[in-house]
Amino acid sequence: MDSLTKVLLIALGLSLITLITIRIFNTFSLNRIVIHEINSADNNISSSKIDALIAKFKVYLKIEELNISYGETESYYRINQMLSKRKKQITIPKWIMPSVGYELDYILASIWFNAKLYQRDKEIKKIQLILKWIPLFLYIVYFLTFILSFVIYFLDKQSIIQATSSKLLIFIFSKPLFELIAIIVFLAIIILIFSSNILKIRLEEKYEKEIISFVKNECESYKMDISAARIYAKSFNKLDFKIFRFNAKTSNLKFVGPFTIL
Image (cartoon, rainbow, N blue to C red; front, side, top):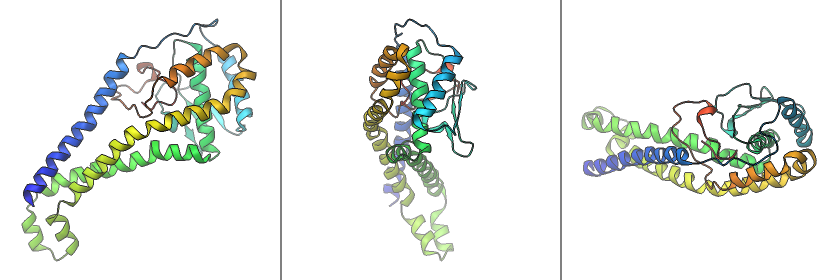
């Protein structure tokens, strides 16, 4: 059993190296991405135009009771972290982008996604569960069992087993329980990282379908810019593109579409 435990601990160490390697790969991949500028009649858009557009979009989505805060912070928020239901507020960080189309797509998508969360849209709630809550649960279980596996291995297990009458403790210390749980959870994390990317296609399609009427009627001057930004966003097939963020400011991140989670 001790040799099996050692093998499982080595596998656990390799699992942690794998998770770190994926993040390092994502970080370098993001650095290599070149953001192409969209040819537009306007190099930038005024705050008053953005405010007017946001006000119209709130009416379009029927979320007039929500407060939209845009540009009041530069701290990066993932799109699934922007909504505060208690405050009835969506906080969208300011993100300096090379083209108006990217900025408008980012604003509209951020409001749309969180409006759907607020309205308890079943499909968006499911995506939020897969994007936020399931990974959070899996990582907590993984790191907890990872630490416990090594702690228990370095304890004097035989003395503890002889000193206790608890069947549960005897089972825990005599079997590589936490090691097995950690490895199973690690595999679940890997499956989730890659399988969740399939959701991005559905998310992009749902978003475009539901805003096309608004863009046509209210964004006439920027219709082509937003269309170009949509093509750019869909060129990234990763939904889970988490990186090592050494600085939490949006100014230090490249924009790779509103639905790519950095």
